[in-house]
Length: 492
Image (cartoon, rainbow, N blue to C red):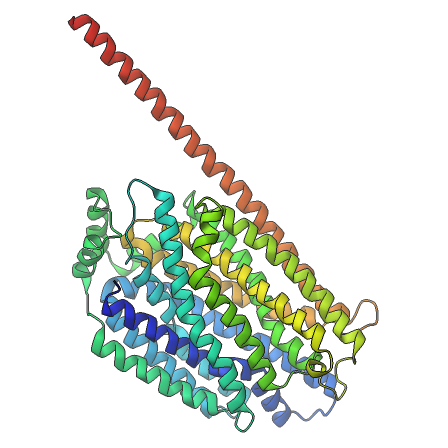
């Protein structure tokens, strides 16, 4: 039975995703519109290249702000509790969307990203939900499966809003590019109101006690002492403690994999709307529906598929992450082939045509390929988060999630401009549109292969440690039993 806090957390995440996705598919069109409005150069190719690069830089700036804010919000969650953190997060979101609704120049778009320093509602929700399900002391694998299922349901809550948002935002943009941003302000303020009324205001030690009394806490004395010390730590000590996870022998490699995968994912997700709008001539409404289909697929799988998938792989998150990344590699290659085929069958980019309506069969398969990419990315990310949150005490889960979000935001500083640079570079073989997409696809596939190899090495080392620990335990147990028999024989 879910508590009212968890229910409101899920509802807030739905509103958060809906508000964010209302304006997300519109940003490429808004950037292009403002570039065209303030450009003195009428050459369409130069204008398209400028729009692509501006969109990439805007995404990187947003990621830079989020990189700074993610660990900060994670620490605030541990110190001032979910209620005040949620109010801060949704207030910042409302401020960001209000500034976006007022933007009349590219600089206005940059200004709208500044309040996103605190726009980390999904982080707050993950930290709350991941600690609300019971850990099993006797079976760590079952505990991992339950935590993965909880994080999957969190993703489902997000993707419910993310499914409605793009379609609704694309529909509103047909008459006003700013309508989605204005509606997002109202959605964020509603979340502020819900947080003020329904969420509890834990602070300091009370938050620790709540977590340690929760089913997910093991109640270990050393863990309790560590939590108490953390309560009285200064801000600099908290930062130092957070950064210590980066060189942790078990967590460090996982976080590094998150960074590489984040660069690959952010590069692809940045160039995807550019390919669909500029090269395949998708309209705002078509782009919105396309993104909604991908989001809906992830929502359904997160709700009913992640737990069976984890069970299929023996409740080993690392195995699920490995094969999820393998599926992503195959889907990325399929995407590249389909984009090239669609452009060659129809028209080259820049001509006055709507490829999305002229090549229905290919676009359908293209949609399916992107759905598989989204599902594989979700499986990999959820599995890695299951591993990281299962490797720290319950009172550090907010901190490790904040660090994860910060790392992914850092990756989005590098990924978007890298993707747009590859997309904008001249063709190697004279067929602009076909070859440029392959530059991005090859980069993403290469990075995904690196992550797969690193994950395999990490898994082998962890299994070797587990096997070694079992062997040592069995040896000590045998010695203990032998000693007991000897003592018994001497006593007889």
